[in-house]
Length: 297
Image (tube, rainbow, N blue to C red; front, top):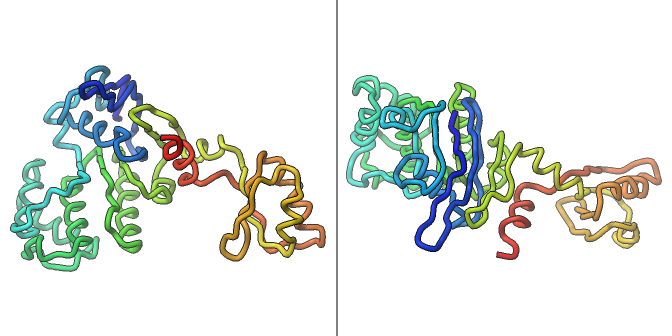
């Protein structure tokens, strides 16, 4: 279990992270989100002891993170770290050996991972010959070849198409099921929502939201109603508490002032006893992100 207690880091007169508290248990995924410069990468670097916190304590299973513990960490940096002129095999085996794997075992595992992640290319290919997406999958393999107990993934899906994003998400879920503690950052809010058990949202180093993903969403109230109905916009707009209506797919998304207004909308659209679709839900994580972090910066 990873614990951050009252972590603070300043660079000159700028506070990058301010009194951050966070717990990531084994078999749990924490999503760390925020705008560029919010403090996410600084947090990762403090966990890995690349930089020292000015205040607070970082522990793994109750103890400081030593070099031995670092051997059990997998880190995927946002700035990818593959050597372009080396072959896939040369550098993956090098990274695996750094984490204590035997060369023969790592070679066997690499072949399995290349197939599992559908990497287009051979282990003898130089990285510079791979597409960006395949190079990113190779970097992912380097991160988890040694079966880490704890994973830090900084923007793991950048540059990947939806199919490969789904492939990596599936592997991350498997690692979680196998007991790994995982913390990752992403600007893909739908991905964060799908993967995360808990969420920490930073803004200029401050924690603005933290907790269970669905609990956070529900705390904003079920203030969105999606309907597919023949009832006109003017009739819906006349309902007290309807703030806006926008076209969405086959229907409309109605934003309401209070979730109780949903009952009035439901009554209206079911006057004839039938409605094609009616869903009342809290705002999406993407909408919450925009509201809490992106606005008024």
